[in-house]
Every structure is written in C-alpha cells, then in structure tokens.
Image (cartoon, rainbow, N blue to C red; front, side, top):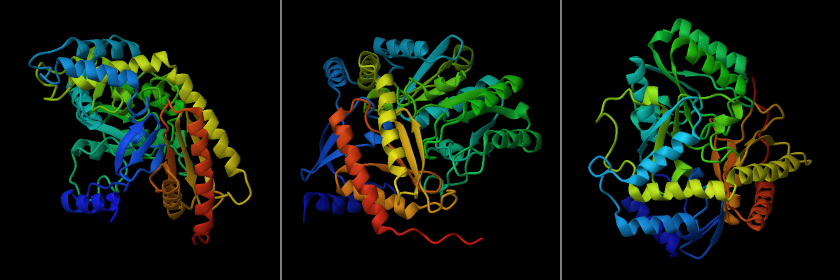
Length: 437
C-alpha cells in the first residue's frame, strides 16, 4: 500500500465523511507547484481556491511570518492590541474605494466576514431582510448557507435557515437570464414579497465563485447601486474569491466603476494564512456598539503580518498587471482550442483576469450541460500532474486559478497538460444524445 493510499484509509477512519477532498496528500509546495507524499509533482491551478494568489510560501510573506513568530503569536486583539492590525486596517481603508472614509474589522474566515457584514448592515439600517443572488456562494455558516444560491452540496439537509433572505436570478451564460430580466425580478420581489423599507442589504459577488465565474455586468451593479441609494439599502460586495488582484484590479467591482458600501475580503488576503476583513464606510461600520464585533482569533498577528506582506508583494511585483496577462494568455489558448474541429462541447470561455473558466456542454446552444465530461477533464488533468477544479450550478464548469506569481514556463507546461487532458476526456466521454422536450 502506497503512502497516499494509506493516508486515504486513515482519513476515512478519522475524518468526518462530509469533509470531501482530493486524494493528493501534499508534502511540500513552492509558488505554483506542489509535491505529494509519494513524490509526484503537480502544477497548482487551484491555489488553495484562490488563496495563494502570491503563490505557495512567497519568500517575503514567509519572512514576515517568521519575524512575527519571534515576537508573539496570539494575545487576542481585544485583550492586548497590536500595531500591525491597525496598520493593515489603515491600508485596507485606503485601498477599498467606497467614496467615503472607511473603517475595517478583521476576522478569520470569509464566512465570518459575511456574517459581520449582515450584522452591521442590520445595525445601521434597523432592518432585517437581505437579498442575494442565485448561484452565489457566501459561506457555510447558517447565514452563509441561507445567502448561498446553490443547494447541493452546501445547503442540502442543513436547514432550516435564517428567515428574510431572498434570491434574485443572476445573469449568466446559457441561463437565459440577462441584466434586464434580473433587475425586473428584483423589482418584482420588492413589490410582491418584501417591502424595500425592510431590506437591510443587497449582497453580490462581482464575479461569482462557486456559481461558475460569471461576472456581474456593470449595468447590473449600477442597477443595484441605484436601488440601494433609492431605498437606503446597504450594497455589499463579496470579494472573497475575486479580490486581492485576482481579476486584474485589487477588487473585481472596480471594473464596473460602481462603489460598494461594504466589502468582504479573505482567501488571497494573507497568502495562505487564515484571515478575513470587512471594509466599508465608517458611517455604516461604526453602527455596531463597542463589544458587538470581534472574535478570539480575529486578526491573528501571524496572519496580519502575512497580509501586510501580501499587500507589499501585490504592489512591488505588479500582480494586478500580471493577473491581466495570465488571463489574456490562458483565455486565448482556450478560445483557440474551442474553435478546433471536434471541440464543440467546449462552450463559453470566461476570462476575468486570472479568474478563468470554461463551460462544458452537449449542444451548440449550451442548454444541455456536460457534468460527466467536466469531471473527466478534472481527473485526466490530475493524472497528468495538473490540479484544476470544477464549479457551476450545473456542475459543468472548469475553473482555473493559477497563482499570479506563476513562472511563464510553468504556465505553458500547464496549458500543454490541460490541452492533452481535454482531448483525452473528449475521447473517453462521448457526446450525450440531444435532450428531449
């Protein structure tokens, strides 16, 4: 029995069955590569699900962590605060453009940032209802699941969920929903199901993560901004997966020109260390009473040191421009591949900087999804040493999240592996017959 197989058996005997994983048991990692316990090398196009935007173990990040570990690792910011937390808050307040003076709070996970965004929006507005979107993912806490617009695997069997959470259709490729239809549905909801004067917040991912890397059109975000202003509703941008330079700007919403009221950050914020942030207008953020916000591990000093280093790396190494370049290179590769004869099932290609996806379909119109083909591509790539992930409400989207620091030679090697893997999967999974009406 190999080491990986033995670890898999131990995992099954020790870890809850609901904690799903791949069978890659990592031993070491560096930048865009990792090696498992059996010495197999993989190129990492998952980046810890958009966490390692600065790559695995970036030297500047690791040096900052080592320096902090020599000083102290935990005091609880509420008991004995420290300058680095304040420094990071100051930097995030400057980076996030809400059009007003900002304030920041630090917590540990993306779900915590979302939970606190809803808490603060409710405290500020004295309202309770929240409107999210289909296909959204906002975390695995009870409120996070309520806001999430995808049942399996995130919500199935875990209800009931908090009340007064509503969903509006998100415009997406092959969904048949455009911006006009989405905004009409929102207006209908506000007229028929929930009084806008009961709504505390709109929450939206400027680029959906689990939903399939669909970008919110600028006109949709502007429509939300207009209605938020009209009704006194807080507009929350969930940038947990799309933020921190991933789409070519620090925040994905910057592409639209729309300014949010609150922004949630996590994943790429601290280069692999657990940290999240909620940043927003001081007039809203200060609505919570002293002692109403926080957590024992919130703003852990090790993670804060890493995050301050990550901000340095993004600036010093030009990672926003790097993300744009990666998107252009990978996007052109996928578009060329999709145009080849026999590749008709490789459907819509979506490029949002280095947040890249392509949809697998059975028909030219894209209405019949190809989840089996999608799973096969993931398996073929893994067999050849490339880690990729699937997503999408129809389980038929491949998402690509290379570290923004990936070496060009490693990126080109990964694209060659991806091409061979797609070809192999197409050969093994025949096209499904047309769906009957």
